[in-house]
Image (cartoon, rainbow, N blue to C red; front, side, top):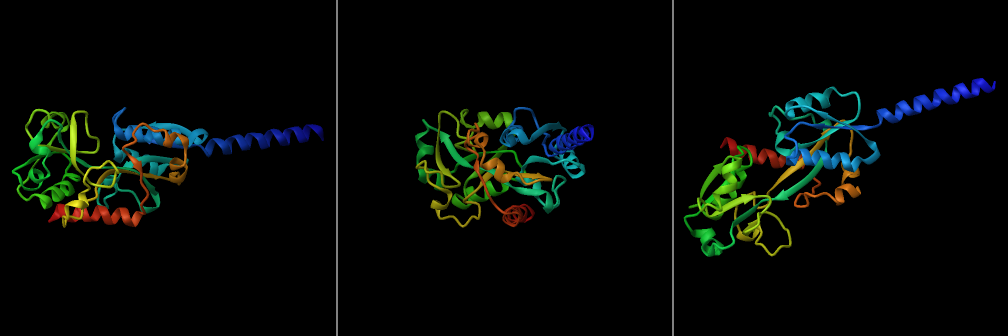
Length: 265
């Protein structure tokens, strides 16, 4: 009888350990190591604590989507919100949307020693040039806002490396980005940040993108949004410009569809 009890306990312990292992949550990494998306996935893993399983490394969001869709264990990933556009190759079914993660507002900045660009009237009425990062998706709402404030503005898109040098070299008067650099001052921020910088809405524009930020959602087979947002690891993350963001699936789709509508007009 004693042997039977010991055997039963051993079997129960084995099944408990298997169950605990399958409860671990994997995180899919699919982007450049050390980049923002990669860091967002690191943030999720850190926030999961003891519930984190392992990183699954693949190349690109389409491959990550396949991993998530076919996974037999809980699996999640930080997802650039533009990937959720319904006809995109990285769009996922609604049941795989596990909430929004983080968003950082766009700033419009100039070199701090550029007195002309510091004049808000120059931004609103001058023959200005504005640098945008070369994103077919985000440059559309950014341009819409800028030209709604100043129809004479010339918007120029740059690939990553020249984007960094366009403003300090004097090629443009302003640059729009989520994180202002040292030596820059900003004439507007497309959100409320309590920094004393005029908000996009303060310009009285008719653009629907006076509040706009680069953002991430969470996709996967299990809901981890509240766990991440309430964790110490999330509270202590380094990317503090990316604030906690909560929006429903329908709100997110409505926002994305508004941009897609502008792209097709």
